[in-house]
Image (cartoon, rainbow, N blue to C red; front, side, top):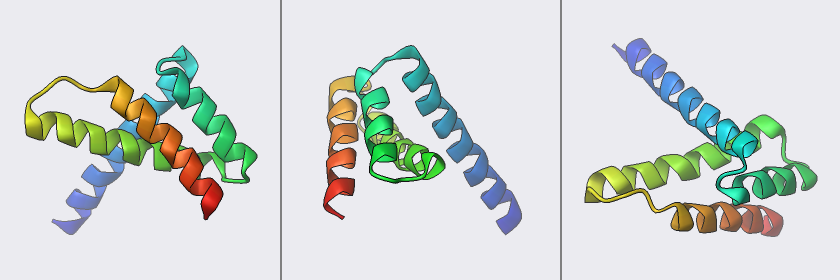
Length: 90
């Protein structure tokens, strides 16, 4: 059972990373491209940066589902920018 849960978690994480990669490629939100460049410029490995950004996306999706409201792309973009700033201060 634990292996199935891990496989599901891995699949979900990969789907979130793919969504972030699509955002970067599409340029929407614009902040996704800026943040990946900023994190990589700070020396963060690309895969790690994508993982951090995917975690931010997951949190916003969870809020959207919990509160049964529309996805707030502006709040998501703001939190992506904060991610890059937080990484600078570490």
